Image 1 (spheres, rainbow, N blue to C red):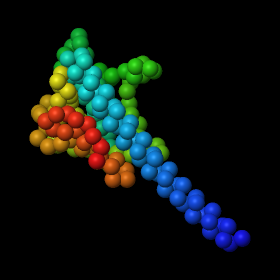
Image 2 (cartoon, helix red, strand yellow; image 1 turned 180 degrees about the vertical axis):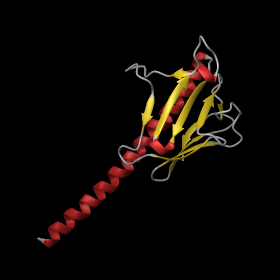
Image 3 (tube, rainbow, N blue to C red; image 1 turned 45 degrees about the horizontal axis):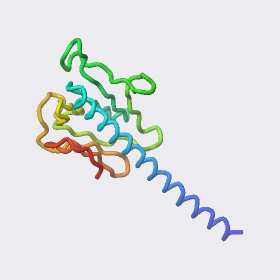
Image 4 (cartoon, rainbow, N blue to C red; image 1 turned 60 degrees about the horizontal axis):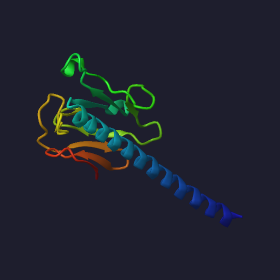
Amino acid sequence: MMVVVGILSGIAATSLSGLSTSRQDVAVTRLRSALIHAQLWAQGSGKPTWMVFDAANDRATLFREDPNQPGKANRMAMLDPLTRAPMVLQLGLDGAGITSVSFGATNEVHFDALGLPHDANGTPLTADGLVGITGGNTVRVTRNTGLVSVD
């Protein structure tokens, strides 16, 4: 009986560990996909987009330029093409959240019409932009090209 309990405990611990890793992988994939979506929108529309990170609340929100009132001050929420709701990426509900954000000294990335990354002030990045995710994964936005990758 004790042997059976020991075996089941080992299986449960392995399963829970795998579940945690799976949740972290999903969070990284969702974040990477949202960044690529914002970048492609900027390139396709010829208008800037922004992704603002709120690490304290494990949230990222996508914005686009208002075509009727250009500029960051009048930016508007990007809408999900399926639900038409504002694109807000909420992480952390399953234990895989945002641990750090670094785009220059800011918490947001701005993609220009060429898809190149800038910080919140519109300054081209001088170092790669990084978003840390629980478990040690990092989503990277390469400074000169805008390539979005996972480390």
